[in-house]
Length: 86
Image 1 (cartoon, rainbow, N blue to C red):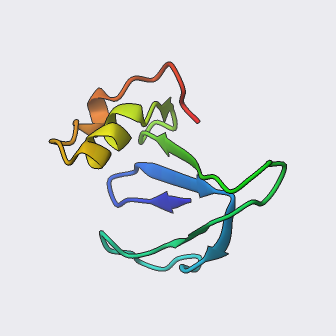
Image 2 (cartoon, one colour):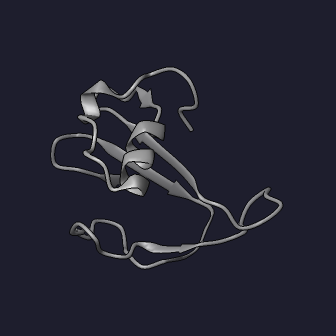
């Protein structure tokens, strides 16, 4: 789990290798690990979750779609708190 200075938390699970350690500062674009096939899974995949500063899960689809398409990123505060939130 990575927590930003403004309280947002980013969870990335099922990685086969972590490239960061507890308490380490990170920067944008820095590799944090490799996706893997860990836990109760049937193949390599990434479990990705976002929690707002109040601890509520938000649906990351709009953010991930914009990143994939190279589009303008939505404001985090506008991401829905229902739908696929993990």
